Image 1 (cartoon, rainbow, N blue to C red):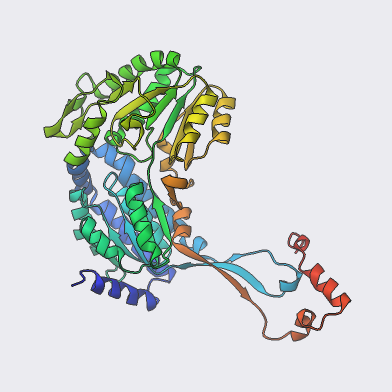
Image 2: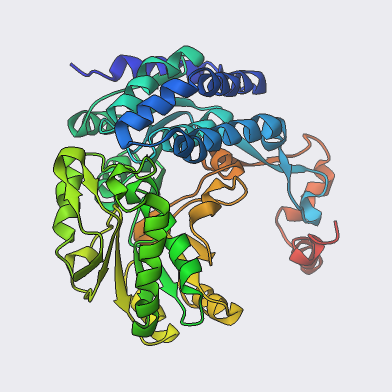
Length: 466
C-alpha cells in the first residue's frame, strides 16, 4: 500500500480548488509559521541541542533568527512580490498589455537535511508558501529530535489541507519520489542529488538542488595570520564543521603556513579552551556513520593541531592537517567536520589553477590585503558564492541568493529569490478584441511598403522609447 497517496491527493485537490492563491491565505500561513517559531523557541533549541549539541545562542543565530527574518521579509513584501510585472513593448504591441505573472507551481516537495534541520526546512518553506504552493516537507530522519518537532508541532500552525510533513528514511524517500510533483527542492549531497534529479526527470519536474562541495580558502602572503586564523577557525568549526558553505581547505604558501598554523592553534584555544571537548561552544558529529568517516580522514597528511576523537561522545577535535596531497582522501570529498587541511601553492596563479582543476564549489574564500588579488580570484574562478576576507556571514542576508553552480547545485533561494524559485513566471499579453484595422499590416499578401513598415515596427530600438 502506498503510504503517501492519500496525503498527496488531498494536497493536490486543495491546490486545484484555488485555496492557496489569495494573498490573504498566503499571509495567514506565513503568520502561522511565525507563531510556530515564537511559541516553540525553547522546544526547538532543546531539539537542536540534542541532535547537534548546539548551544541556544548558536541555534538562534544559525537557525531561528534566520527563519524569522525570512518570514518577516515575506510578510512585508508579499503583495509587492505578487504584483504583475509590466514589461517593455514594441510598436506592434503598444496597445496591448504585456506583463509577467508569478504563479504557484502547485504541489511542491521539500527534502531537507540534518545539519541545519530547522533553517534548511523552513527557509525554502517560506518561499513555497509565499508563492502560493501546497507543500510536502520531508525532514531528515538523522536529526530525529528536530524531525519530531517538525512532524508533530508545525502542522498545527498551518492549513493541513495544503501542507503535510512526511517521515522516513531512504526507502520511504524513494517511494515518495516515485510520485509526480510540480517542483522539488532538495538540499543534501551530490550523490543523493543525482537520485532526486533522475526521479524528477521521469515526470519532467523542475528542481532546485542545493548541494555541497569542497570550498577553497586562499590565503595570501600579505595577510595578518591571526586575523585569518580567527575567521577561518570560527567558520570551519561552527556546527562542528557540518556546514555546506564552510571553508573546506586552505591554499597558501609554505611561508604563510608556518605563520598560520600557530595562529590557528591560538584561535582554537581562545574559542574552545585547552580542552575543546568540554567547551559548550563546539558541537558534535551527527551520527556514528559520519564520525567513523571523519576519523578515517585524520590519517591523511600530518596532524599539527588536534587529531583527538571520542566515539562515545561523537567528538572530533578541531584539527589542522599539513603535508596534504591533492590525491589524499581528505581532498576527494567534502569533509563536513572540524578538520582543516592545508595545501601548499607557490602563487596566486597556482592557487587559481588548483581551484579550476576541480569541481565548482558552493563557496570560495580569499584572504588578502590586496584588492587586486581578491578581484583576480573573483574574476578567474567560478563558484556559487564568493567571499573576500570573511566567512559565510553572507548566508544571513536575505538580499543575496544562496545556490551552487555545476556539481555544487542548481537554482537559488533566500528572500525574494525563494519566492521566485517557487513561482512559475508566466508570460502574458492581453490584446483588444477590436481594432482589427491596426492588425491588418501583419496579414498577407505583403507589399514592399507593408513589409518595411512591419519590420520597422518590430525593431528593438523602439523598446527603449515607448
